[in-house]
Image 1 (tube, rainbow, N blue to C red):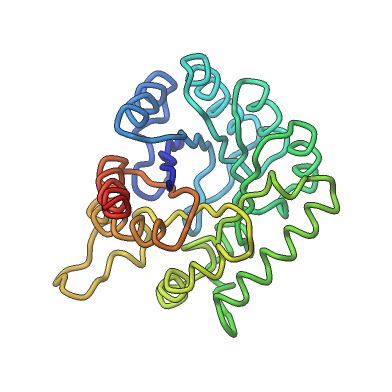
Image 2: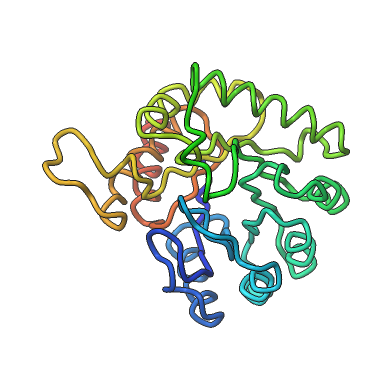
Length: 266
């Protein structure tokens, strides 16, 4: 069964919902809504990773994330913390986070591996080529699927060498991060090859730019109009054997995965 990770951006500047949940009470309420709609995990993040975004100070990220993680965990929600900073991850784990989602795969903060190894929590390591302000300039590949696979294989080797047990590591091919539309479509088509690395795989295509221009659709879709396309990618992910999908709109993906699961039983 493919799990659903609901996105909870506690930020003023995320690309599709920035500012909607940046107050703690509103964020906690939305996190509970995501669970009631069918999410298995709520991923709480205090730093926007949209292209061109600037990093918030560490203290600001901490202040955004930790109260929300704590409040949701106190209500029995399975929480992931979306951060590239080891210090934020450590405090969030103490507050109740059960998982760390690091879009840099440990490259942004060398201390991250020791934090997750000591805590023993699952660790999501994404394919990453640099921070948001510079990542679009790094969108060059010989073969995007093979290049991503090789990068992820190397990250696993390095993380294991730094003390993170292999079974803790979850891989994310990094849709939209240093990738143009053609790269993303190729990666989606080759997703089963990423799964074949033998680790659990998380995929986050939700509302990404490459879903905004589609055959049969006569207009460019705004971010919030891309949920049906996101649900379609969630179904493709399930077919490829992906462990979890990370989405903003839980109901549409829950329905798509429900259709897939019924069909499998049928």
